[in-house]
Length: 263
Image 1 (cartoon, rainbow, N blue to C red):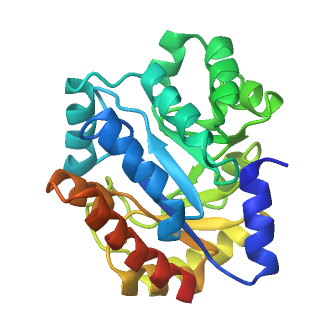
Image 2 (cartoon, rainbow, N blue to C red):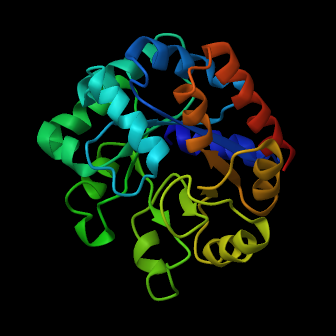
């Protein structure tokens, strides 16, 4: 079992919902980003999604696009993002870390080398948004063979014919995108999300975690009541973009995690 599998098994036994937080690696700089990352578990985060900055993030809205630009301008790379994971693991060997991003940096690094380096650093799973199931042999299957979860996204447009293909080689959890469009574009509505989560859970035993459009403790709680947990990304990244001190960013994260854990 990966740390992701262990965490969700523990949460299930405790009848608790998961709170997943996304930050962009290296935003606004490596040391500040690492300090925030190191504080996330004590702020109630169950799983950390760590973004790998990329020049053409097609699934992301302006907030995360700008975070990636800030990180790249500060010199962040895939190698430095893995170094963040290694440094995090010096003090925390339990909180799962999922790298989230795009295939180009991984392909450029070399798939086999990347998987070796990611596993050695302490990465537990991958979300690579521009690799569809038809390309599972590129990265998904090698990643799982290396002991990393490969987490797939389902969306409101993933119909009954497509869903089995999406779920086929997914592991860890299913990330349900609550809205059509890019990150940070609209607010998620529990009334709309609930039936979709139920539809996915009828096809898989994996936890279903909902992301996109969650920015307040109340919305985190509402979404968590109809899913196995929720992800917040853009709203946290905006706090960082606004120049909030690390402690204030973590206080905000704690308010969101408290909401999700009430769900």
